[in-house]
Length: 112
Length: 114
View 1 (cartoon, chains in turn blue, green):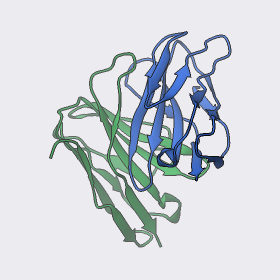
View 2 (view 1 turned 135 degrees about the vertical axis):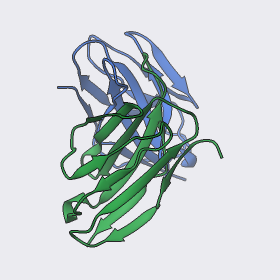
View 3 (view 1 turned 90 degrees about the horizontal axis):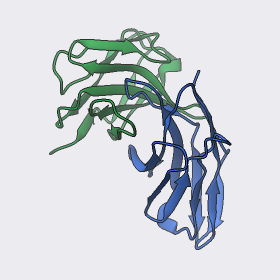
View 4 (view 1 turned 90 degrees about the vertical axis):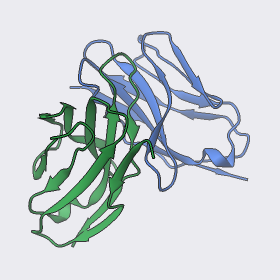
């Protein structure tokens, strides 16, 4: 079945550091790929997405590129801020039904 | 207010009791979902619904019951709560299926079974 593997956390960075959170997937067919973010005490919200190979999703300075050859969708940001502290989930959706398969989440803590 | 709301936000119940978690959305989205969030597992799908009166099992449906008599409501019932059902529960909704359709999540219900 479908699955998503993302790097273990927590990840602790200093403000303005470069961020990479790795995500790889296994799926039948051609999935759409997503990054969702969960701020403390809140539900998940969509950060960015990509629907086909070589697409780049971007939002709020975050980027991720859909790499079919490596089945990856790594999240990057050039300069993180304290306000980026949250849990980040990689997810995929295949076929009908809009059902999302999530990774385990990576907690990011950004310190001054 | 427009959006998706869950109630209650926090609930403590005893083992063996029945408890219902409520979910209401104002967008008339076709699809609604229930996920549970547990450390080390991320979010796992419990049940989902493609429209009123259409529901289907997800990855971890055992011990849960859902109904959807109206498009906007999707309650989740734990028929006889167990400690293993202590978790944070998220309801979500989305429009009709299409590549990259965004899911909108409620704020979650933290359920503790003692």
